[in-house]
Structures are given as structure tokens and as C-alpha cells.
Length: 233
Ligand SMILES: *Cc1c(COP(=O)(O)O)cnc(C)c1O
Picture (cartoon, rainbow, N blue to C red):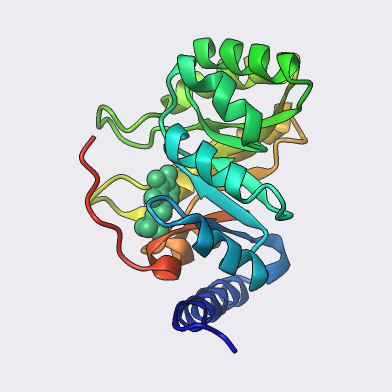
């Protein structure tokens, strides 16, 4: 017997998977090319457990304190943990201890801190360069012009591997244009670093546009888990 919550999550998951499949079919891609990452921030570890039971393999969090506790509670589950939030260097050690992929690398000081943390714990951490697709301050990300140098720094840092790029579409902008720009940045990066194949783009509201532009990883919270309460930072 499924609980109400499990039934709700199962229905949401089926709907999101259907959206991904349709978006892939529309541009001649295989749905197997797109990994669904469940963004579980603000939701309890019990939801992570239910999602894992329903076949979700990848989860993401954006705040270290919440993420570290949840990852510890879910240590027995075969999940890949993604960190997608803005990251202070003094949290690098903690984040590196439970994360498999960090999507939000946007400055060299963070590369240094993550490298030190990863080598200290003997782990290998996959890092994505977060690309800022507009001029808005405070949302993280490096401008496209800064991507090559940051990518080189990640690729040559002990304990880190360069996974690719990540972006959030600018608020109020045209997501298709933003993700098109991201695709260009990603292609230029792959020309130099062929293994950097991940394009992390697309959320509940714009995953179709992201998939049309080549996203390999979509980060979906609301459409899977429901609305979040506002978090005061
Ligand atoms: C919260 C969050 C998401 C998920 O957003 P939804 O609109 O709830 O799907 C994706 N990416 C990042 C970086 C986030 O912080």
C-alpha cells in the first residue's frame, strides 16, 4: 500500500518523466540522454527516501546545513548527490564530504577549497562551471568570458573532474535564448575538454526549452515535490 505522499510523488514523477520524454521526442533526442535530478531542498529526508523507492537516482540540495543532515539520513540509499547552491569556501569541506557533483563552481578560490577538501577525504568530486547568463548580481555564476580559465583550473585541480556547465535562466528573460547561449558555451568548452559533457539546465518551469538546447541534466523541484515555503536568507 502506498501512502498518500508516495502516491502524490509517484504521480508527479510520472508527469515530469512524460514532459522530459515529450521534450526529447520533439527534438529527436532519446530520453535516456537526460538525467532527472530531484531538487529536494526544504523537503524532508522521508521524501528523498520515497523518491529513491520510485526510481529517482539523483537528488540536489542548495544549502549545506540542510543537505549534510539529509545526506546522512539517506546514506544507505544508492543516490547521486548534487549541490546546486551558492557555496562559501568555508563550507567546501562539508559539501565535498557528501556530494558527488557540485554545479555551482564560479570562482577559482572555490576550486582551490573544493580540491583541498576532496583530496583530504580521498574522494573525487565532479564540478560544473556555473555560467551567469545575465548581468543580475547575486545569483552566482561566472560570465561566459570567464568560463575557459575556470574550467582549466578545475580540470587541473587534484581531486576534481570537470563535468561541464550549469546555468539558471535569467528571471523574466527568454529561457530559450539563455539556454541557446549556454549551449554555445558548452560546445566551446567541449572543444577543449571533450569529457566535459554535462549541461545542467532547466527547472520545473523551463525544462522543455533546456532539453531543446541540449540539457543533459534537468533540476526539478516544484513539479515533483510541490511548492516550497519562502526561505528567508
Ligand atoms: C530550487 C532550484 C531548482 C529547482 O527549481 P524548481 O523551479 O522548483 O523546479 C533548480 N536549480 C536550482 C539551482 C535551484 O536552487
